Structures are given as structure tokens and as C-alpha cells.
Image (cartoon, rainbow, N blue to C red; front, side, top):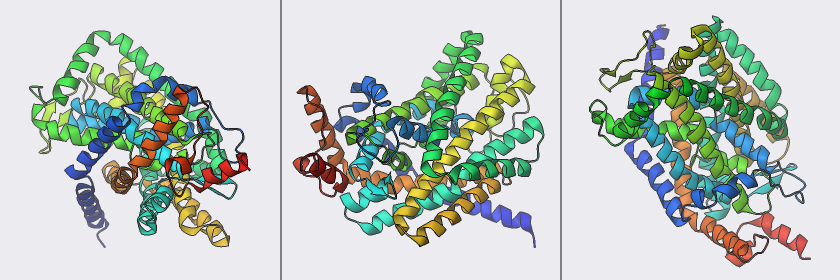
Amino acid sequence: MNFSLLSLDFSSVVETVVGWVWSPALVALCLGAGLYFSIRTRFVQVRHFGEMFRLLFHTDKSQKVGISSFQAFAVALSGRVGTGNIVGVATAIGYGGPGAIVWMWIIAFLGAGSAYAEATLSQIYKEEKGGQFRGGPSYYIEKGLRSKAFAVLFACSALLACGLFMPPVQSNGIAMSFSDTFHIPPAYVGVGVALLIALVVIGGVRRIASVASVVAPFMAILYVLLSIVILAFNAPAVPAALSDMFRSAMGMHEVFGGILGTAIAWGVKRGIYSNEAGQGTGAIVAGAAKVSHPVRQGLVQAFSVYVDTLLVCTATAVMILATHTYQVTDAAGNVLAASSVEGLGEPGVSYTIAAVATLIGDSAAGMLISIALLFFAFTTIMAYYYYAETSLVYLLGKGRRERLALWLLRISVVASVFFGSLKEARTIWCLGDIGVGTMAWINIIAILLLSEKAIKALRAYERQQKNGEKPVFDPDELGIAGADYWKEKKQQNNP
């Protein structure tokens, strides 16, 4: 049997499916939904920026189950800050040019509006199951839209995406980086990462939240500080890099003007892969938080989009662009811009390593980025497992059948992590894109249909704040049906 031919056919099929899922229609839907929510909320992501940060540390202690608001932020940040920030950014530049980064910014800014809406809806329709809160698109689709079939469709897509398609992207980045830097066979790296993941996911959401709340913010801060140091040493090149970004994003660059459509597509695709706004996964962890008002978790999740894209992704992008350690090719394979260093290969982690190497040398740069990628990708896989677990619980409910299914899921996630270390990066990224795009199609349509609920909640919240009142969510007063948890809470507070 010709295994190379089978591999080629598999890769070809995967790339074809990516083209269907990530058609221009999905790019337009993502941008349009973000713009719609930004306008309808009167740019809540700007007006409440200070409150977003303050609410990170606000938790409703009267709720006996659930995780803290900061832990929910950390888990969501873990899902957002991963290989997309180091490898994905480089890929966007390599195929879309410097302008792709500006479109990543645009989708992050607008996507913060979508992130607010989906997280708020998740809180409105959350349930208490097995001693913890569960929420997300499946829950608000079933209760808000009253469509069980549509809810099951999202749960199945999220289970496949987060349980099988997306974890390999993270482990692939780790394996390739460690193989190049430390000369460790990718299969060995895959085994090591798979075992570490197994130890964490067996502990469930509380262990995931505990690990993520320490690792994710710490690594993000260190990585941004590293980029600042590198940019300080390359300060004269920064203005030209920024100019290239904005000119090519608007189609005005003499070299990159011809790939404007590609820049938009790659910027939106890699932006959503990284910040998850509108994808629905951030909403899943938002539903696990114990907060006194749904809007508060909506604001926190909007803030996490900023941290991911405007800080961490930007750190990678400007490092690469300022040091000119990248090359850009068009769809025909023609090199539009050559790198200042040779031997970079296909767009990926090598671009980021080469940028850091301009300051500390190849060997140290490889080790530093490999370790950063290990922590980023590891915490992202943890978040993916939680998203998949929540979807599985929604589909099966409680009981013996659920416990068996959870163990099968854990085995599947661990196996997919190992699988990712063995395959070529391009095919693995295509699988991840299929997972992200499928969830985005379903979730964005759902939150657009449910938009009025999130808008009503925000207006009531702001009205109570303006009147000097402590914001209290009353679904009956707002005419929101299906918010059973909040109705029960109201009855307990007003017997």
C-alpha cells in the first residue's frame, strides 16, 4: 500500500474542506457580526475598558459552585494564547503580508463586541450540573432559540473540533520547535506532552483553572516583555514596519497591494483562531464563572480578546517585521518579499525564533521560544479539553454513561496530542481551521439571532449603574425566558 499517496490524498481533501469552510462568506460574517455588536452596544469594548480590568477580580461569593471570574478569564486566555500567537502570526505574515496583522487587530477590536455578546448569553442561560456551572452556545441555543437540533449540532462540532482537530495544532508546534532546537524526535516530544496533558485533564475543570490562572498570565507577561526588549534594540526599524503593515492592509503598498484580499482572509482567519471571538469556545468557559451579573463576565471575556491579540500577537508580529525575519509568497508561490536571513523555510515558528535570535543568538532564541511555545500550547490544550468536556456533558447528561464517555474523551484528546506531533504542520493547521470555522458558522448565526437578549442585559446593567444601584439581573423584568438559574436565584433572595 502506498502510504505517501494516502497522505497526499488526505492532505488534499483537508485543504479542500478548509476552502469550503473558510469561504469569503465566513470572513464577511465574522467582520459583520463584530461590527454589528460593536454598534449595537455603542462600542462597549471601549466605553467599559476600565471596568473590564476591574471585574477580572470580582467574584460572586454567594454562589457556592463555579470558578472565579479571574479563573474563567485565565482559562479563556489559555485557549486564546497558544501557537496562534507565535506560529499563527508568522503564518499570517508569510501568506498575507504585513497587512494581515492589521486585519487581526480589526477582527480583535470588533470581535470584542462578539465576545461580550456570547459570554453574556452563556451566563444568562447557564446551568448547574455535577457541582459546577455549565454554559456556552449549546445551552443558549437550546434555551434562547428553542432549537435542540441546532444546539446539538454545535455541541457535536465543538466536541470534534476541541477534542480531535485543534489539540494537534498545539502539539505540532511544540514538537516541531523542540525537534529543531533540541534535536528531540517529534514522537518523543508528543509522548511527553500527551502524558502531561493526561495528568491535568483527569483533574477536571478546577485543576485546569488552577494551572491556567498561574501559567497563562505569567507567560503572556514574560513574552510581551521579551518583545519590548527586542523592539528597543531595533527601534529605528519599527516605524517602517508599522508603515508596511498599514499600507499593505489598505492595499496601498507597492509590493503587497496585489494580495489585499489574501491579507484580509489570513488576518481574519488567524485572528479568530487566536482570539476565539465569535467562535463560541470562550463562551463555554464564561458560563462556568460565578458572577453576580451576566454582563460582568461578558466584559471580562471581551478584555481577554484584547490581551491575546493586541498584546501577545502584536508582540510577535512587530518583532518579526522590525527584524525583517520573514518572507511573503503569493498564491502562485512567487516570493514577494525576501527575508534578511536565509533558510527560514515555510512560515512558522522559525520566523519568531529568527527575530529573537537577532538579539541573543540562534541557540538561545530557539530554546527560549520553544519553552514559551510549550507553556502557551500546553495551557491551550487544557482549555480545549474543557470545551470538549462541556460539549460532551451537554450531549449525554449525568450518569454512568457520561463518566465512561468522559474517559473516552480524555483518551481521545491525549491521542490527538500525540498524533499532532507526527504530521506535517500544514495539514494539522488545516484541520484546526476546519474546527474553528465550523464552530464560528454555527455560533455567530446563533448570537446574531439572540443579540437582543445581550443588548437588553447591557442596557439594564448600565441603567442600574447610572442610578447608583447595585446591578441585579432580573430575566423576568427583561422578558428573557429560559434563564432558569437566575430565576431560581431571585426566588432564593426574595422568598
